[in-house]
Image (cartoon, rainbow, N blue to C red; front, side, top):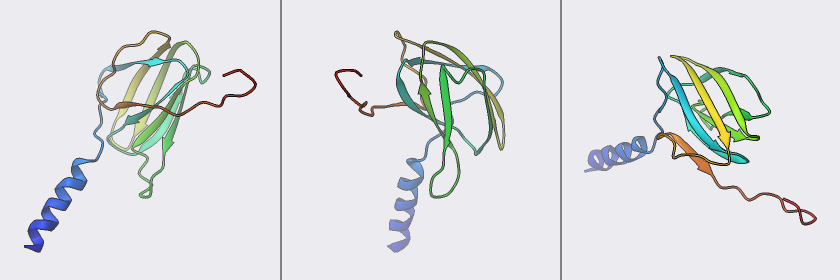
Length: 124
């Protein structure tokens, strides 16, 4: 009986893990809303990130308890197009982020984060 409970627990925990939504032999296109933040799931640990313009998009790998760096924190700062080359343990991905006021629903794997902004002196 304990083995069944353990098996069900393992299945539940592993099903919550994020899966990579990136394609390795193609340019991955993501539309972002300006002044928003996102989480991007990557299949393996991130080794290197080359960003063409950090004024448009800033990307930071997230370190968890396991120090796996399998998720990225993406900030869309300004309107524009930014190309990113992402090197992981297994693959190299090319990503194009388009940031603007109009955006489309994105692929699975990119999750928008709703964090309140600081309101100060009547300005946002």
